[in-house]
Image (cartoon, rainbow, N blue to C red; front, side, top):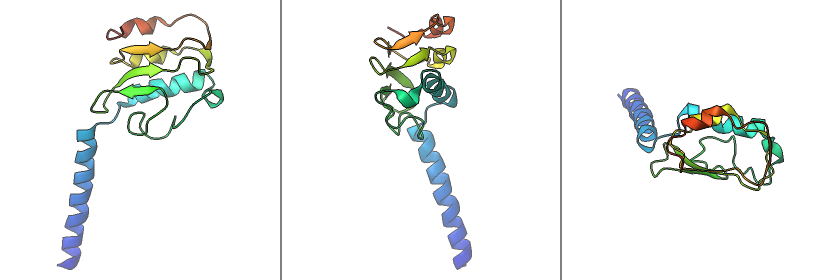
Length: 124
């Protein structure tokens, strides 16, 4: 009975953790991947501030310059102005469908602005 009860507790704890993750919400992988693409295409290792980037969830782990909705489920702001970004703006940035504000000024960005940014209908 002790082993059986222990097994049930393990299952209950697992289900509770799984459910808690759903309630708190995590940024969808498409949004996380878009942020990773920004990091990789703009020499993120050389940014002035790249605190917590690529570690865990962009909202839960407070990636520098990333702000999220109150539930932590979607990126609503990307503020990387004057942060020594060097390279091109990736087309994947168009996957941040809930972004209201995007600040990339004051960097060394090259190339054309990807047409996919036109998909950011929430952008002010």
